[in-house]
Every structure is written in C-alpha cells, then in structure tokens.
Image (cartoon, rainbow, N blue to C red; front, side, top):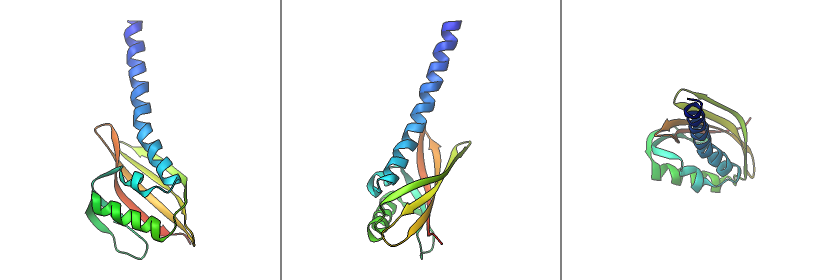
Length: 129
C-alpha cells in the first residue's frame, strides 16, 4: 500500500512539473523577446489586442503569430518581467511588463489548460503610462 501511494505521489509531482514546464518555456521566450517561440504556445485561435488597435477576436494562429512578430519587431521588444501569475481551474493569467526601444508595454496573457498543455487564448498589450 505504501508503495502504491508513493508511486501515485511521484506521478502527481511529475505531472505538476510537466504542466509548469510549458509555462516556464513561455516566460523564457518572452524574456528573450522571441515572438516565434511565444506564438508556438498559441491555441488554434487567439483574441489579440495591440496598442492603438481594436481587439481582434478568434484570429487564426498563423495570423496572430505574424501580428505578434511584427509588434515585437516594430517596437524593439527586448525583455519581459512577470508581474503576476495566477491559475484558476483550467485557466491561467500571466501579466507583466515588456521593455521596448522607445517605451514599455504591459502584457496580459490568458492561457487555457488543454490536454495537459497551456495554450494562449488571449493576448492584450498596451503601452505603459
């Protein structure tokens, strides 16, 4: 019985680390300002809001990747710092600040846990005050 409980506990620990691994990779991608790697975490459709533009709902993964890559490039995004990270049920919020060449930006990501993996379903970026 002890052996069974031990094995169940180890499986739970490994599952927890596996789920946090993809979020850690996402944060690392943001810190290195790698839009290509960030967009690799997108769900099939993404709601995206960029500074000075209206929100686009259900943008295809490829189009959203292009929009994010262009934003990073146009604004010289060079870093990211996590402000908050919370998980509630199957959703997770990550908020933080991105450093750009001329100004800083706030970013909020909404992720959904799908098949044991966190996929980005919403990206909101606005200029810091």
